[in-house]
Length: 438
Image (cartoon, rainbow, N blue to C red; front, side, top):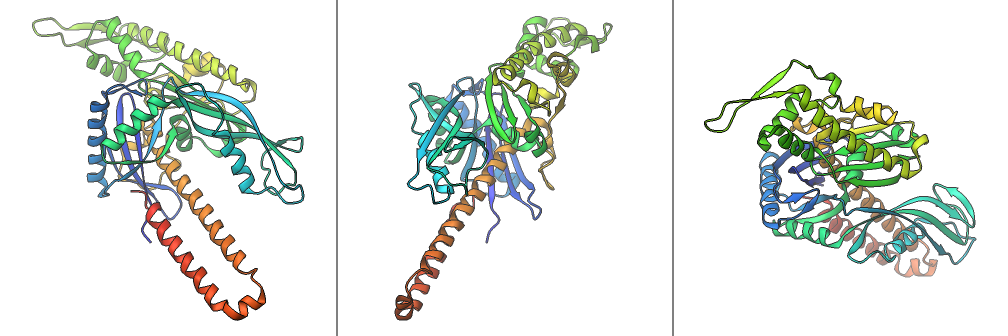
């Protein structure tokens, strides 16, 4: 059987990145190759220019194919943007009998029903995430499978996205000759690569500061409780520097990365940076202290928005794990300290290293690739879930076959056994073709 290969495709506002990975013998992700290209057709997580985005995706995929030696056909794609909305909803189903145990099929039926609820015009549901279950008015149940009851209820966190934004992503990916296997909310993907199980249990806030947006995801007791997308990221800081210092965009980005600090007091008053002038013009002297003033003002705005989302979630005083900052913006000097000062919560920078094995792509260990690595991990989880469901179906078929009467077994036992084995073989072979995700 071939190794299963998964490809994550992050269509970001600053870059478009594709990562190819497989699992090693220890269950860790081994990165086989990476491709990236500047993103000129995406603004704040939303595709605004189809042609430019298609070109960038093609470049990233081609580079990923060359570095990994894999012919890429199927990808797991992230989605973000200010159009993403999170809403709470309650749902319930009534079962036929209280004597029979609640099964996975009952839970799936309840979840699938939630995908049919009415959403605002122009929006559709991309994720349905159960919070707590209720069985016959017994509340606070984390796992209802195996219990007995007639009425099964649950509170849900439902994530919606604009249909037009989804369609534009689909259109871009299909025009490059690829197929989307899973469309995943980016903060959920990032959480897979940088958060620990202990943090999710204790309660933690994930803040992914990207180029166009900052994504927020709040976990408590291993359940994602709240998500939000803040329409500010690293690009707007660069834009502020460009306007405040009256320099070119490229110069502003380099200035931010090399000399930027998120706290003014950390910048030296006597430190200056010389920026080359345009043709025939003298160089421009930029004060590192003034640069820090510009950066701190915008970072404070981003952190205030994050803090408001934490308060809105209702979990402000329950998040023992504090804040984990990731994404390209997390690499800004003193970013962690500013988060701690403004929120009063512990913070750390999240690196996507814990779940990585040996890799040919050392650069991918940076926080700026947390989302892309998370998309690869999400793809493997989807494959594992599909494997489990398929094996359960096969086991059920086998168990059903054993309930045949002895008369039938005597007259045609070999016939039924051969049919089951033949069917089992066909099902597995057919599934293997699908699960080699590349």
